[in-house]
Amino acid sequence: MSGRATTRLAWGLAGVALVLIVSATVVSSAGGTGVFIWAITVVFAAVGVLIALRQPRNAIGWLFLGAAVGAGLGALAASYADHWIDARTGPALLGETAAWYGDLSWMPFILVPATFLLLLFPDGRLLSSRWRPVAWCAGLGIAANFVAEGLHAGRISDYPQIKNPYGVDSVAVDALQGLAALTLLVAVAGSSLSLVLRFRRANGEQREQLKWLAFAGAIAAVTLVVAVLTWDQIGETAANVSIMVSVLGLPIATAIAILRYRLYDIDLVINRTLVYGALTATLAAVYLGSVLVLQLVLTGLTRGSGLAVAVSTLAAAAVFRPARARIQQTVDRRFFRRKYDAQRTLEGFSAKVRNQVDLASMSSDLSAVVAETLQPAHVTLWLRERT
Image (cartoon, rainbow, N blue to C red):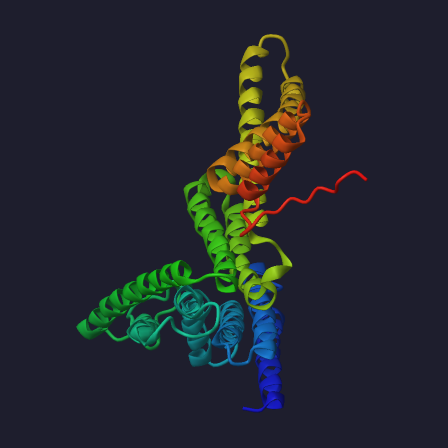
């Protein structure tokens, strides 16, 4: 395919996705589609266009564009189904079909990245030809799951007032559903294993690229678990927003890794994330703990909780700097040992130089510090003689 045809195809798919999501907003009787599906469609389309235009041979860009079109089509189907249920105008088969597809439309932008993105990242090719069965399991598993869910008899999950117009009450459908689940399990496990093996074998540029996807995937996994466990405490809206933001980090991290992985130092990003994540949790614990304790202590002295909140805020502010320094030191020592050892070596050398007057001893110490911290192939120290 020529460069011009590739450009037209990429922009055409992105345009189709945007037209679909805008049409869904117009059709929706609720005044618009959800922010989540809007963000998924726009971000996937934008990342897909960027990758497809700069690296058209990389299949990941086209996967993102296909997922964006699927998300937009699903949003339009769900919006029309809601409109048809509320107004009851238009062909019944079209409304039921829209509800049917809207219930299944999550698969393209959830299952495809969960399998093929891990298999093909970052160059758009499999690790080796031995991984083709895993790719076949992913493709057949997604297709079989779509067909099995689409033929499942009974009420539609997202629209319990509508009976599945294409449902088939048969044992074969249940068997296909079980086979699809097993195939998808093999595909997801195999895709994850492929990414791990690729990271272990990679070096240089590809290793840095893989760190980006691993970093975004770890954040998404932790956020999902925390949101599910604290669903009742933080509320449905906060949980959905946190999950949405973490999932959207996957295509963004993919774009940075494939196109401009040198734009940011991933090790620095990971370091800051660990430090400020732990610092936020520590300050929240200090604040909430002090509020609860002070409210119990001051119950007999004051009716309101204003004093407890004020004192807790001051306590959290006072803890900020020492807590940040301690957490930074712990993170460097535990996860960035080379940087931590180099810093300790330089601090020791600085303290020693203050009292060192012997030039030969200082030269030896300087050469040792450079060799230990920078680890060069050769160290030479030149001193200009006094004329």
